[in-house]
Amino acid sequence: MYNNRFKDNDEYKAKIDAYRPLNENIVKQIQEYYRIGLTYSSNALEGNTLDLVETKVVLEDGLTINGKPMKDHLETLGHSDAFYGLLKLAKTNTLTEDNIKYLHKLFYNRINPTEAGHYRTKDIIVTGADIGFPKPESLSEKMAEFSEEISKIKSQLHPVEYSAMLHAKFVNIHPFVDGNGRVARLLMNLALLQSGYNITIIPPIVRADYIRAIQETNRNNFVPFINFISEMALESQKEYLRIIESLK
Image (cartoon, rainbow, N blue to C red; front, side, top):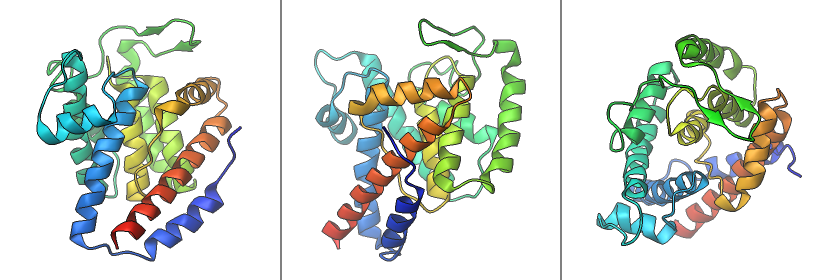
């Protein structure tokens, strides 16, 4: 059972803010930590077989891992590209449809440059998940509605709730042929960074809970997912604070 932890998140954000501004060296170390950690965890949630150490080797040393699919390597490099794009967008105060396409293009360009940054042109069926994604011909309209809703809900919700709602509503549209889950988590983190929070990682060990909560959002029950994300954000903030204190 996951609970609403907005209050605890606010308290940890205040503790972290007390250390800001951080010096440039610490910022670079933290960014590298999360580039590797977010890339590993987000890919692993989607079935990528590279573990954390292998992900680090691919990103830092530029090596390939024997016996592992090339697509897993390309996903790793692509997510790293998207992470840098995320940091760039985090310096702004807007989140647009073009930003979404940009993040997908960065992630998917090494895998399929033709599909990267473009909405899918075929149906997606997820057997047994009780999820019906929009038809390709309605995606532009759905994404336009989604983008319009973003600006409306941002001022009405707690930043963590806002980030969770972005993730849930986007992933239920599933506009791209592949990479939707990873883009959803990038969007969630973009919303958090723009609100002064830090990167939130969803560990692969809680994948089953994560999927169940997402499936509930497809039935218009967003509470379990919002609570889940609020706990993930809190644990990530605790880790962020530990990192800062260890580097000071």
